[in-house]
Image (cartoon, rainbow, N blue to C red; front, side, top):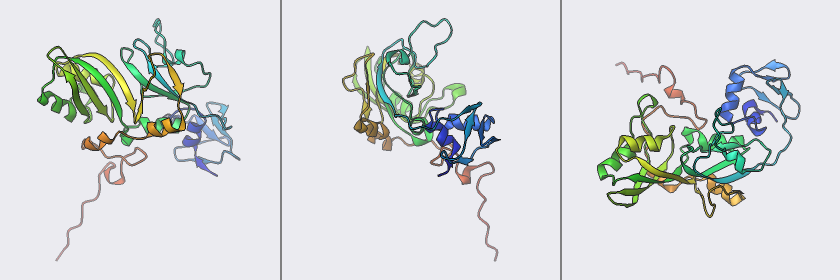
Length: 277
């Protein structure tokens, strides 16, 4: 049965669906000796798919899903920058398979990271159009006012990175010195929580991600990991109920596949015709 080539590539652990689409757009993928374009389909049983000169291996492989409690000062990338001696999350997991991260964390933050070779799942849980939730426990300096929390939830400008998406922020404990916040987000920019907190004059003292979807850290200690059960994977796919209270911004709408809707493409929808008498 024929399927879209980017889907087959993701299943073969080449990368997320989005990354595979980029490879196709760059002309680096061939089917039966012919360079393909986006939208092309292939039958893995009869067609030969070549990516960067290598035949795509579509043999059945075991899907791996691992939850790790990333310690502070550990990198989420697979290869650290030159002269950076800090370990990566991959140093904690004794597996040879190439795994992708679901939900990166800054080196100075800790908490839940999921690693998997399931490219399809990575796409669904990381693309902004799916509005999948992540929950954080954040300790900040000072006690934010109700007005400050409202500003945070509505969205803050990060300059060239644009506005942050709406989120939920709740004070679970606090005084004039430190406050503990529970933050639920559906989309995150680089170091977003820390940048927003600094702008609002409540710098972050400590940041821990506690949940991705409904999957929580549980009893995992920093540096510990475990493979997920089928029940865990279902929890990972589910969205926190609070997401219903997070109203998306009036940005360009997305179709379920992450692209703009037909009525929002360049030029917009056609205006209704006026009736003539």
